[in-house]
Length: 394
Image (cartoon, rainbow, N blue to C red; front, side, top):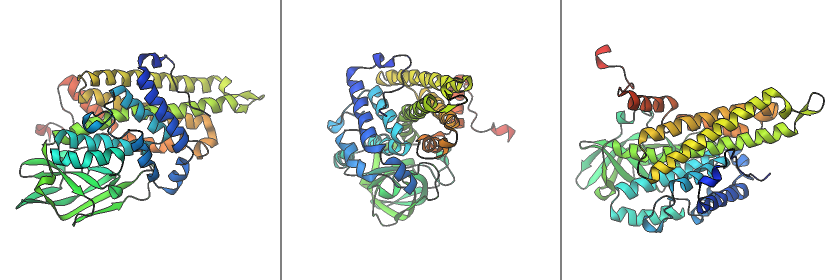
């Protein structure tokens, strides 16, 4: 069945012809190249690495950036790309999101000319793959507590520590690593094969199975001075990277929600019960479908406004938190309701619903949990940070 989109309010009229063309090109790519194979890769717990060059040919890596002949697409176009990729699978969107927002963005924003000249063209085509190492086994929501360190040794830096839950970790040619130094938190480029740098994949996942998730280990790992990102100073630098990625997630989650809704709607129209009546004719099923399309539509309006603000330079991190928090929650609830409508068929991968339902559990947690984004917004509107109790009450 060809996917024609979920557009209850006619929002297509609010985007440009170029943005629609880009979305439709990625939509066709997902329908042709991803959907026929993704269930098998999900079962195997493997990432479809052969798609990398095709994604590069479409210009999806670094799509919102202009330097180095990158596409320089609008924030809306980039969001629509994320939406369609996640409609295929959250792991696929994560792969492109990490490459673009968490590797190419810090290079372009904080890197030296030499670093950019060497890596950006390779990353843009998919010739090179990158990963982003911030989260640690003991520090996720509080990245400032990281234990990974980097100390000067002549004209080199020696890195020690561990990073966990790293997308693309074991297949990455270059890792953007954040570590504590005497100067504060700094970013470093660590190339695959550097002595003292090893990776180990996370197995036993029931979520994001068609994605590579790794642990990165650094034991007296020496990198040259020129591998430091010269303009990245302090925790603000990696958090700026996360804002770029979280923006894409706000759009991407809607893609998973749209796919689940569409599958549930078509199933409800064709599944007959009680006097050979489609279950779509029953009030309780209609209530579920109405809730789904209403919340998806509200999420689309939110994402579109975020895009407009981003293009105007008015988008703040707490705005992005609202997009990530709301739209991932919507996707989670839509997947749950779609599973209910499909009944027993909702738990088998003959349909994509259970895969999306499992995947969204990771998306709900990574790059800022639902609760953390609640606190980010809460601090902005009240002026009081509530991440920890006041010291005097401890």
